[in-house]
Image (tube, rainbow, N blue to C red):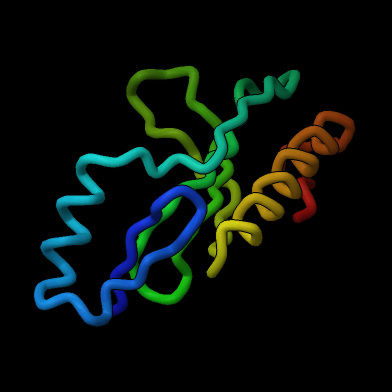
Length: 116
């Protein structure tokens, strides 16, 4: 398994560290991993959230997810989309594409018509 941490916009791989899992875990628990976060209200469906984070494991180190938030406290948000990226720049671009797709869905017939 590959472990990495993020310093500024730079991915630092922990391949040459004696205990990469421990170093990654300590960093993961004490650092901000959010790259971008946007929320859009889609009429008739509710709040859609686009979140891009740094994961720091394996080869796809960043992840964008799109969630439809539930209006009920009994249900978790529904995941509509996930994509992973290897670089910070790819993650930013992927986040922007996802946000544009959510805005486009406001004019689509259903949230399922989101095209990414």
